[in-house]
Amino acid sequence: MSLVDFSSDAFIVAFLLYCLSFTFYGMAVLGKRFRKRDPEAHVTKWGKIAFVTASIGLICHLVYFFTRWAGSGHVPVSNMYEFMTFLSMAIMIAFLVLFFLYKKSMLGLFALPLVILIMAYAAVFPQEVQPLIPSLQSYWLGIHVTLAALGDAFFAVGFVAGLMYLLRTVNFNEKDKQSRREQRWLELCMFAIVVLLGFIVSVYSFRAAGYHAEFNQTNIDPATETSTIVKVDYDMPPLVAPYNSETISMQPFLGMKSPLFEAPSWMHGINAGRKFNTVVWSVVSGIILYGLLRLVIRRPIAKVIQPVLNKLDPDDLDEISYRAIAIGFPIFTLGGLIFAMIWADIAWGRFWGWDPKEVWALITWLFYSVYLHLRLSKGWQGKKSSWLTVIGFIVVMFTLVGVNLIIAGLHSYAGTD
Image (cartoon, rainbow, N blue to C red; front, side, top):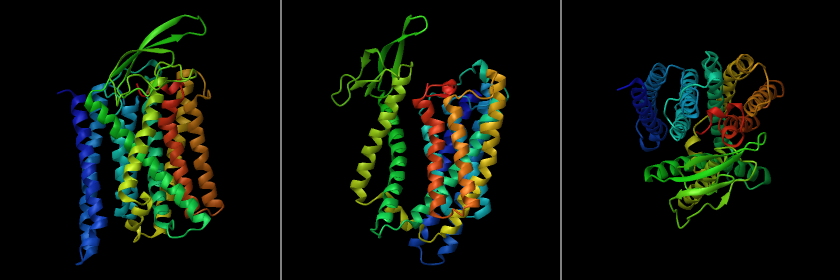
Protein backbone atom coordinates (compact mmCIF):
# COMPACT_ATOMS: atom_id res chain seq x y z
CA MET A 1 0.00 0.00 0.00
CA SER A 2 1.37 3.42 -0.97
CA LEU A 3 1.53 6.36 1.42
CA VAL A 4 -1.17 8.15 -0.57
CA ASP A 5 -3.51 5.16 -0.25
CA PHE A 6 -2.74 4.95 3.47
CA SER A 7 -3.47 8.65 3.84
CA SER A 8 -6.90 8.14 2.25
CA ASP A 9 -7.68 5.41 4.77
CA ALA A 10 -6.59 7.68 7.63
CA PHE A 11 -8.86 10.40 6.27
CA ILE A 12 -11.85 8.03 6.27
CA VAL A 13 -11.09 6.94 9.84
CA ALA A 14 -10.89 10.59 10.93
CA PHE A 15 -14.24 11.27 9.27
CA LEU A 16 -15.89 8.35 11.05
CA LEU A 17 -14.41 9.37 14.42
CA TYR A 18 -15.71 12.92 13.97
CA CYS A 19 -19.17 11.52 13.25
CA LEU A 20 -18.91 9.40 16.41
CA SER A 21 -17.70 12.39 18.41
CA PHE A 22 -20.67 14.43 17.17
CA THR A 23 -22.97 11.66 18.41
CA PHE A 24 -21.28 11.72 21.82
CA TYR A 25 -21.57 15.51 22.01
CA GLY A 26 -25.26 15.11 21.26
CA MET A 27 -25.55 12.66 24.16
CA ALA A 28 -23.58 15.04 26.38
CA VAL A 29 -25.86 17.96 25.63
CA LEU A 30 -29.22 16.29 25.10
CA GLY A 31 -28.81 13.30 27.41
CA LYS A 32 -29.56 15.33 30.53
CA ARG A 33 -33.13 15.71 29.29
CA PHE A 34 -33.66 11.97 29.71
CA ARG A 35 -31.69 11.36 32.87
CA LYS A 36 -33.03 12.55 36.21
CA ARG A 37 -30.21 11.40 38.46
CA ASP A 38 -27.13 13.57 38.53
CA PRO A 39 -27.55 15.01 35.03
CA GLU A 40 -24.41 17.14 35.26
CA ALA A 41 -22.24 14.06 35.83
CA HIS A 42 -23.87 12.52 32.75
CA VAL A 43 -23.01 15.58 30.68
CA THR A 44 -19.44 15.63 31.94
CA LYS A 45 -18.89 11.94 31.19
CA TRP A 46 -20.18 12.06 27.62
CA GLY A 47 -18.49 15.41 27.04
CA LYS A 48 -15.13 13.90 27.96
CA ILE A 49 -15.74 10.87 25.73
CA ALA A 50 -16.69 13.17 22.85
CA PHE A 51 -13.58 15.30 23.37
CA VAL A 52 -11.27 12.25 23.43
CA THR A 53 -12.92 10.82 20.32
CA ALA A 54 -12.55 14.14 18.49
CA SER A 55 -8.89 14.33 19.55
CA ILE A 56 -8.19 10.83 18.21
CA GLY A 57 -9.96 11.84 15.01
CA LEU A 58 -7.68 14.87 14.73
CA ILE A 59 -4.63 12.61 15.18
CA CYS A 60 -5.87 10.46 12.29
CA HIS A 61 -6.46 13.63 10.29
CA LEU A 62 -2.88 14.71 10.94
CA VAL A 63 -1.69 11.25 9.87
CA TYR A 64 -3.58 11.74 6.61
CA PHE A 65 -1.99 15.16 6.11
CA PHE A 66 1.62 14.13 6.70
CA THR A 67 1.45 10.79 4.87
CA ARG A 68 -0.10 12.46 1.82
CA TRP A 69 2.61 15.11 2.05
CA ALA A 70 5.29 12.41 2.11
CA GLY A 71 3.62 10.42 -0.67
CA SER A 72 3.02 13.36 -3.01
CA GLY A 73 6.27 15.21 -2.34
CA HIS A 74 4.56 18.53 -1.60
CA VAL A 75 2.37 20.01 1.09
CA PRO A 76 -1.18 18.80 0.31
CA VAL A 77 -3.01 22.10 -0.16
CA SER A 78 -2.61 22.58 -3.92
CA ASN A 79 -6.16 21.75 -5.13
CA MET A 80 -9.70 21.95 -3.82
CA TYR A 81 -9.72 18.43 -2.36
CA GLU A 82 -6.49 18.96 -0.45
CA PHE A 83 -7.36 22.48 0.63
CA MET A 84 -10.82 21.59 1.95
CA THR A 85 -9.44 18.59 3.84
CA PHE A 86 -6.83 20.84 5.42
CA LEU A 87 -9.46 23.48 6.22
CA SER A 88 -11.59 20.89 8.03
CA MET A 89 -8.52 19.80 10.00
CA ALA A 90 -7.73 23.42 10.84
CA ILE A 91 -11.30 23.96 12.09
CA MET A 92 -10.86 20.97 14.41
CA ILE A 93 -7.63 22.48 15.74
CA ALA A 94 -9.35 25.84 16.26
CA PHE A 95 -12.31 24.15 17.96
CA LEU A 96 -10.07 22.22 20.35
CA VAL A 97 -8.16 25.41 21.23
CA LEU A 98 -11.42 27.20 22.08
CA PHE A 99 -12.72 24.12 23.91
CA PHE A 100 -9.61 24.10 26.11
CA LEU A 101 -10.30 27.72 26.98
CA TYR A 102 -14.06 27.57 27.63
CA LYS A 103 -14.97 23.88 28.21
CA LYS A 104 -18.34 24.16 26.42
CA SER A 105 -19.57 20.80 25.12
CA MET A 106 -22.35 22.54 23.19
CA LEU A 107 -19.72 24.09 20.92
CA GLY A 108 -18.81 20.60 19.70
CA LEU A 109 -22.42 19.88 18.82
CA PHE A 110 -22.24 22.67 16.20
CA ALA A 111 -18.53 22.70 15.24
CA LEU A 112 -18.33 18.96 14.43
CA PRO A 113 -21.13 19.07 11.82
CA LEU A 114 -19.31 21.92 10.06
CA VAL A 115 -16.11 19.84 9.97
CA ILE A 116 -18.00 16.78 8.73
CA LEU A 117 -19.77 18.77 5.99
CA ILE A 118 -16.50 20.28 4.74
CA MET A 119 -14.81 16.85 4.70
CA ALA A 120 -17.74 15.39 2.76
CA TYR A 121 -17.62 18.37 0.40
CA ALA A 122 -13.87 17.85 -0.11
CA ALA A 123 -14.47 14.27 -1.22
CA VAL A 124 -16.60 15.61 -4.10
CA PHE A 125 -13.43 16.78 -5.88
CA PRO A 126 -10.85 14.56 -7.64
CA GLN A 127 -8.59 12.97 -5.04
CA GLU A 128 -5.63 11.98 -7.19
CA VAL A 129 -2.25 13.52 -6.44
CA GLN A 130 -1.62 16.14 -9.10
CA PRO A 131 1.81 17.51 -10.09
CA LEU A 132 2.37 21.11 -9.12
CA ILE A 133 2.36 23.75 -11.83
CA PRO A 134 5.58 25.85 -11.82
CA SER A 135 4.13 28.79 -9.89
CA LEU A 136 3.17 26.45 -7.02
CA GLN A 137 6.57 24.81 -6.71
CA SER A 138 7.66 26.88 -3.74
CA TYR A 139 7.87 26.50 0.03
CA TRP A 140 5.64 29.59 0.15
CA LEU A 141 2.75 27.32 -0.87
CA GLY A 142 2.71 25.69 2.55
CA ILE A 143 3.30 28.92 4.46
CA HIS A 144 0.69 31.03 2.66
CA VAL A 145 -2.12 28.48 2.30
CA THR A 146 -1.85 26.78 5.69
CA LEU A 147 -1.80 30.04 7.65
CA ALA A 148 -4.65 31.51 5.59
CA ALA A 149 -6.70 28.35 6.15
CA LEU A 150 -5.95 28.35 9.88
CA GLY A 151 -7.15 31.95 10.09
CA ASP A 152 -10.30 30.96 8.20
CA ALA A 153 -10.75 28.05 10.63
CA PHE A 154 -10.89 30.40 13.63
CA PHE A 155 -13.35 32.57 11.68
CA ALA A 156 -15.43 29.39 11.19
CA VAL A 157 -15.50 28.68 14.93
CA GLY A 158 -16.43 32.32 15.51
CA PHE A 159 -19.29 31.83 13.05
CA VAL A 160 -20.44 28.68 14.87
CA ALA A 161 -20.53 30.49 18.23
CA GLY A 162 -22.20 33.54 16.67
CA LEU A 163 -24.85 31.38 15.00
CA MET A 164 -25.47 29.60 18.31
CA TYR A 165 -25.92 33.01 19.97
CA LEU A 166 -28.55 33.98 17.42
CA LEU A 167 -30.33 30.63 17.71
CA ARG A 168 -30.33 31.13 21.48
CA THR A 169 -31.57 34.73 21.56
CA VAL A 170 -33.87 35.32 18.57
CA ASN A 171 -37.42 35.31 19.92
CA PHE A 172 -39.72 33.19 17.74
CA ASN A 173 -42.76 34.05 19.87
CA GLU A 174 -42.65 37.76 19.09
CA LYS A 175 -44.47 39.01 15.99
CA ASP A 176 -43.14 42.56 15.72
CA LYS A 177 -41.33 43.71 12.59
CA GLN A 178 -37.81 43.45 14.06
CA SER A 179 -38.35 39.92 15.40
CA ARG A 180 -39.84 38.71 12.13
CA ARG A 181 -36.88 40.11 10.23
CA GLU A 182 -34.44 38.30 12.53
CA GLN A 183 -36.41 35.07 12.21
CA ARG A 184 -36.35 35.24 8.41
CA TRP A 185 -32.62 35.92 8.20
CA LEU A 186 -31.80 33.20 10.70
CA GLU A 187 -33.90 30.70 8.76
CA LEU A 188 -32.08 31.79 5.61
CA CYS A 189 -28.82 30.76 7.32
CA MET A 190 -30.35 27.35 8.01
CA PHE A 191 -31.39 27.13 4.37
CA ALA A 192 -27.82 27.88 3.21
CA ILE A 193 -26.49 25.03 5.35
CA VAL A 194 -29.17 22.69 3.95
CA VAL A 195 -28.16 23.73 0.40
CA LEU A 196 -24.60 22.55 1.06
CA LEU A 197 -25.90 19.31 2.58
CA GLY A 198 -28.28 18.78 -0.34
CA PHE A 199 -25.51 19.29 -2.86
CA ILE A 200 -23.28 16.75 -1.13
CA VAL A 201 -26.12 14.21 -1.02
CA SER A 202 -26.90 14.71 -4.72
CA VAL A 203 -23.25 14.41 -5.77
CA TYR A 204 -22.75 11.14 -3.93
CA SER A 205 -26.08 9.81 -5.19
CA PHE A 206 -25.22 10.42 -8.84
CA ARG A 207 -21.69 9.17 -8.28
CA ALA A 208 -23.01 5.94 -6.77
CA ALA A 209 -25.40 5.58 -9.71
CA GLY A 210 -22.49 6.03 -12.15
CA TYR A 211 -24.10 8.95 -13.98
CA HIS A 212 -22.11 10.37 -16.89
CA ALA A 213 -22.58 12.89 -19.70
CA GLU A 214 -20.07 14.11 -22.27
CA PHE A 215 -19.85 17.23 -24.43
CA ASN A 216 -17.55 18.66 -27.07
CA GLN A 217 -17.01 22.35 -26.41
CA THR A 218 -15.64 24.64 -29.11
CA ASN A 219 -13.36 27.37 -27.74
CA ILE A 220 -12.20 30.28 -29.87
CA ASP A 221 -8.99 32.13 -29.06
CA PRO A 222 -9.82 35.85 -29.53
CA ALA A 223 -6.19 36.72 -30.22
CA THR A 224 -5.60 34.22 -33.04
CA GLU A 225 -9.25 33.46 -33.90
CA THR A 226 -8.36 29.77 -33.93
CA SER A 227 -10.80 27.23 -32.50
CA THR A 228 -10.17 24.11 -30.46
CA ILE A 229 -12.55 21.36 -29.41
CA VAL A 230 -12.33 20.18 -25.80
CA LYS A 231 -14.15 17.24 -24.23
CA VAL A 232 -16.07 18.13 -21.05
CA ASP A 233 -17.32 15.35 -18.74
CA TYR A 234 -20.24 15.73 -16.32
CA ASP A 235 -20.88 13.48 -13.32
CA MET A 236 -24.25 15.11 -12.61
CA PRO A 237 -27.22 15.57 -14.97
CA PRO A 238 -26.44 18.61 -17.16
CA LEU A 239 -29.12 21.12 -16.37
CA VAL A 240 -26.65 23.55 -17.93
CA ALA A 241 -24.59 22.56 -20.97
CA PRO A 242 -21.18 24.13 -21.66
CA TYR A 243 -21.25 27.25 -23.80
CA ASN A 244 -20.93 26.60 -27.54
CA SER A 245 -21.00 22.81 -27.17
CA GLU A 246 -22.66 19.73 -28.61
CA THR A 247 -23.82 16.66 -26.70
CA ILE A 248 -21.78 13.50 -27.32
CA SER A 249 -23.52 11.26 -24.80
CA MET A 250 -25.98 11.81 -21.97
CA GLN A 251 -27.83 9.41 -19.73
CA PRO A 252 -31.52 10.39 -19.45
CA PHE A 253 -32.61 11.74 -16.08
CA LEU A 254 -36.30 11.98 -15.07
CA GLY A 255 -37.27 12.14 -18.72
CA MET A 256 -34.66 14.81 -19.52
CA LYS A 257 -32.71 13.71 -22.59
CA SER A 258 -30.92 16.99 -23.24
CA PRO A 259 -29.70 19.95 -21.13
CA LEU A 260 -32.31 22.51 -20.16
CA PHE A 261 -30.20 25.41 -21.40
CA GLU A 262 -26.68 26.40 -22.37
CA ALA A 263 -24.33 28.42 -20.20
CA PRO A 264 -24.19 32.13 -21.15
CA SER A 265 -21.42 33.37 -23.43
CA TRP A 266 -19.44 34.99 -20.61
CA MET A 267 -19.03 31.47 -19.14
CA HIS A 268 -16.92 30.35 -22.09
CA GLY A 269 -14.08 28.74 -20.09
CA ILE A 270 -13.38 25.04 -20.49
CA ASN A 271 -15.04 24.05 -17.21
CA ALA A 272 -17.22 27.14 -16.65
CA GLY A 273 -20.40 25.39 -17.76
CA ARG A 274 -19.77 22.42 -15.49
CA LYS A 275 -19.09 24.72 -12.55
CA PHE A 276 -22.29 26.65 -13.23
CA ASN A 277 -24.14 23.35 -13.42
CA THR A 278 -22.72 22.55 -9.97
CA VAL A 279 -24.07 25.83 -8.57
CA VAL A 280 -27.51 25.20 -10.07
CA TRP A 281 -27.61 21.67 -8.65
CA SER A 282 -26.59 23.01 -5.23
CA VAL A 283 -29.59 25.33 -5.18
CA VAL A 284 -32.05 22.82 -6.64
CA SER A 285 -31.06 19.97 -4.30
CA GLY A 286 -31.00 22.35 -1.34
CA ILE A 287 -34.51 23.62 -2.07
CA ILE A 288 -35.82 20.06 -2.35
CA LEU A 289 -34.15 18.91 0.86
CA TYR A 290 -35.22 22.03 2.75
CA GLY A 291 -38.79 21.58 1.54
CA LEU A 292 -38.82 17.96 2.72
CA LEU A 293 -37.45 18.94 6.13
CA ARG A 294 -40.04 21.67 6.57
CA LEU A 295 -42.76 19.24 5.49
CA VAL A 296 -41.69 16.82 8.22
CA ILE A 297 -41.04 19.20 11.12
CA ARG A 298 -43.72 21.78 10.08
CA ARG A 299 -41.75 24.57 11.75
CA PRO A 300 -38.70 26.69 10.90
CA ILE A 301 -35.49 24.69 11.42
CA ALA A 302 -34.06 27.43 13.65
CA LYS A 303 -37.11 27.24 15.91
CA VAL A 304 -36.68 23.48 16.27
CA ILE A 305 -33.01 23.87 17.26
CA GLN A 306 -33.53 26.72 19.73
CA PRO A 307 -34.75 24.66 22.74
CA VAL A 308 -31.47 22.71 22.71
CA LEU A 309 -29.60 25.94 23.55
CA ASN A 310 -31.82 27.18 26.38
CA LYS A 311 -29.30 26.35 29.12
CA LEU A 312 -26.44 28.24 27.48
CA ASP A 313 -25.31 31.67 28.62
CA PRO A 314 -25.49 34.00 25.57
CA ASP A 315 -22.65 36.12 26.96
CA ASP A 316 -20.37 33.06 26.89
CA LEU A 317 -21.23 32.41 23.24
CA ASP A 318 -20.60 36.05 22.38
CA GLU A 319 -17.22 35.95 24.12
CA ILE A 320 -16.20 32.69 22.38
CA SER A 321 -17.15 34.13 19.00
CA TYR A 322 -15.13 37.29 19.56
CA ARG A 323 -12.13 35.39 20.96
CA ALA A 324 -12.04 33.03 17.96
CA ILE A 325 -12.02 35.92 15.49
CA ALA A 326 -9.46 37.84 17.54
CA ILE A 327 -7.13 34.81 17.32
CA GLY A 328 -7.83 34.15 13.64
CA PHE A 329 -7.43 37.72 12.38
CA PRO A 330 -3.62 38.11 12.82
CA ILE A 331 -3.08 34.57 11.49
CA PHE A 332 -5.13 35.34 8.39
CA THR A 333 -3.36 38.69 7.99
CA LEU A 334 -0.01 36.91 7.82
CA GLY A 335 -1.07 33.99 5.63
CA GLY A 336 -3.80 35.50 3.49
CA LEU A 337 -2.22 38.89 2.76
CA ILE A 338 1.41 39.47 3.77
CA PHE A 339 2.92 36.08 2.84
CA ALA A 340 0.56 35.85 -0.14
CA MET A 341 1.92 39.11 -1.56
CA ILE A 342 5.51 38.02 -0.99
CA TRP A 343 4.84 34.78 -2.86
CA ALA A 344 2.97 36.62 -5.64
CA ASP A 345 6.00 38.83 -6.18
CA ILE A 346 8.26 35.77 -6.40
CA ALA A 347 5.92 33.77 -8.66
CA TRP A 348 4.42 36.47 -10.89
CA GLY A 349 6.71 39.46 -10.43
CA ARG A 350 4.16 41.69 -8.65
CA PHE A 351 2.79 41.99 -5.14
CA TRP A 352 -0.77 42.68 -6.25
CA GLY A 353 -2.64 42.05 -9.50
CA TRP A 354 -6.36 42.38 -8.73
CA ASP A 355 -6.92 38.68 -9.35
CA PRO A 356 -10.42 37.71 -8.09
CA LYS A 357 -9.03 35.55 -5.28
CA GLU A 358 -6.71 38.36 -4.18
CA VAL A 359 -9.57 40.86 -4.21
CA TRP A 360 -11.84 38.63 -2.13
CA ALA A 361 -9.06 37.84 0.32
CA LEU A 362 -8.69 41.60 0.80
CA ILE A 363 -12.48 41.96 1.21
CA THR A 364 -12.38 39.22 3.88
CA TRP A 365 -9.57 41.00 5.73
CA LEU A 366 -11.33 44.38 5.52
CA PHE A 367 -14.60 42.87 6.76
CA TYR A 368 -13.03 41.38 9.87
CA SER A 369 -11.09 44.60 10.41
CA VAL A 370 -14.43 46.42 10.51
CA TYR A 371 -15.83 43.73 12.83
CA LEU A 372 -13.01 44.20 15.34
CA HIS A 373 -13.27 47.99 15.09
CA LEU A 374 -17.01 47.96 15.74
CA ARG A 375 -16.60 45.44 18.54
CA LEU A 376 -13.79 47.22 20.37
CA SER A 377 -14.48 50.87 19.60
CA LYS A 378 -18.24 51.07 19.10
CA GLY A 379 -19.34 48.43 21.60
CA TRP A 380 -21.05 46.18 19.07
CA GLN A 381 -21.77 43.04 21.04
CA GLY A 382 -24.52 40.46 21.21
CA LYS A 383 -26.78 40.26 18.17
CA LYS A 384 -24.99 42.91 16.12
CA SER A 385 -21.66 41.19 16.58
CA SER A 386 -23.14 37.74 15.91
CA TRP A 387 -24.79 38.81 12.67
CA LEU A 388 -21.41 40.14 11.54
CA THR A 389 -19.78 36.74 12.21
CA VAL A 390 -22.42 35.06 10.05
CA ILE A 391 -21.94 37.54 7.20
CA GLY A 392 -18.17 37.25 7.57
CA PHE A 393 -18.24 33.49 7.18
CA ILE A 394 -20.37 33.84 4.05
CA VAL A 395 -17.61 36.10 2.67
CA VAL A 396 -15.00 33.50 3.67
CA MET A 397 -16.83 30.65 1.95
CA PHE A 398 -17.40 32.68 -1.21
CA THR A 399 -13.67 33.49 -1.26
CA LEU A 400 -12.74 29.82 -0.82
CA VAL A 401 -15.39 28.15 -2.98
CA GLY A 402 -17.55 30.65 -4.87
CA VAL A 403 -14.65 32.42 -6.59
CA ASN A 404 -13.37 29.08 -7.93
CA LEU A 405 -16.81 28.03 -9.14
CA ILE A 406 -17.92 31.29 -10.71
CA ILE A 407 -14.93 33.54 -11.46
CA ALA A 408 -11.86 32.59 -13.48
CA GLY A 409 -8.45 33.84 -12.41
CA LEU A 410 -4.87 32.95 -11.66
CA HIS A 411 -6.03 30.85 -8.71
CA SER A 412 -8.29 28.68 -10.90
CA TYR A 413 -5.73 25.87 -10.67
CA ALA A 414 -7.37 25.20 -7.31
CA GLY A 415 -10.80 24.86 -8.88
CA THR A 416 -13.16 21.96 -9.26
CA ASP A 417 -11.20 20.04 -11.89
